[in-house]
Length: 220
Image 1 (cartoon, rainbow, N blue to C red):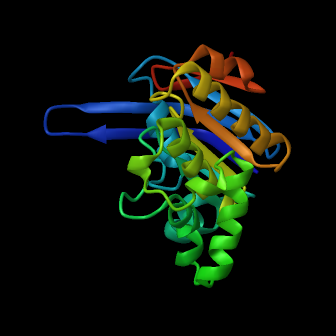
Image 2: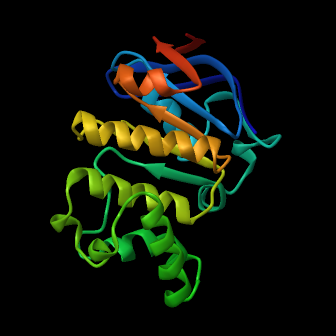
């Protein structure tokens, strides 16, 4: 589904040129849970950004179902195919849990009633009880906020789910719950789930662990 062929990416500043990715090649499939690990500065976040369609490689190709992302409308690619779960949740402070989860459907022009019915179902799936649907994020725990963020990723039915340190702000108990949810997304929902993590527990639950070192990728 997602193929990287000799992908390179370079940051340039007035002071220096940084080779963030140096010839990365890999394949990712639906129904699989991938962990992307490695030291800070190794290129993990840059790679995740390229997979999300936030930019295109300087050289090499990223192909989605055979088509290079460099030839696509990247806004449409992200809208149709990609959901991103952030470490800091990225919830709207003035929207309730239900409204946050339904937000991608609002953008698609789906009626408020239908959007919130589907969002409520996804929130229930990730363990948010009905009495918390109308609470603002500030009235939810960190684990609950992260589950709302995952529900928001689920409602769009995208094939590709990317998560950047999704357990970084959580205690071990809530972190493990999030890992279990991500694993279920891959195996039961048939999504391709790719997680950047420093947590060995998260990596240990993945089907495939990929190690980034100095802008290069190898199977661990």
